[in-house]
Amino acid sequence: MNAIIGEKLGMTQIFNEANEAIAVTAVKAGPVVVTQIKRVDTDGYDAIQIAFKEMSTTKAGRPSTGHFAKAGVAPHRHVVEVRVDDPDAYELGQVITIADVLEVGGLADITGITKGKGFSGVMKRYNFAGMGSSHGVHKTHRAPGSIGACATPARVFKGKRMPGRMGGDQRTMMNIEVIQVDADRNLLLLAGSVPGPKGSVVVIREAVKAGG
Image 1 (tube, rainbow, N blue to C red):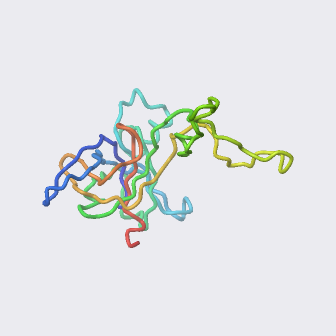
Image 2 (image 1 turned 135 degrees about the horizontal axis):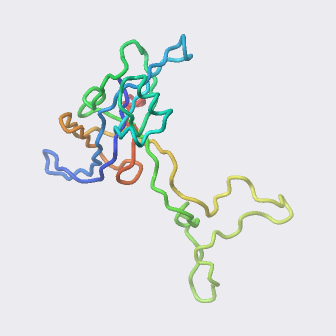
């Protein structure tokens, strides 16, 4: 198994053997349960579906309730499909913990939804320098400036960096070092930052480019 679902708890710091402070992100990773198995002969590819964070049956819709009942498990809030090489190595209802996926010193890829910043200007969104703010300058200090030519090409090119909605996008941080794994409490400490706010759901996978 090479993936698990978790919930970001926040950031803290720990000290290594050299008394150096290391910023880490705490994640409650798993346990997850296998709720569906897909095979090449029936679905065209090999994969399993894992579910995280059990919830009350009264809060689940009828389609979800039937789907989880078919696997013989309680309804869960989050499901993720993971490609596997041998789907026959798994069975419905199987519980997977963080100890089955990662170990201390390994590398992981973390996928999450970044914090939403709302409608932002070009200085915040793209790190523009802004305009001058000396005497005689109009109130255009944070304006983007010219966005295109006049008669030629007489339009604004697609993809022009301009004000707009910032954040709320899926991002993957690659090759994040695993600092600690607490299998008893399902806790994971990752070096550095992880996409998303506190309480957001992240998908943790073994690093696909760990070899460089």
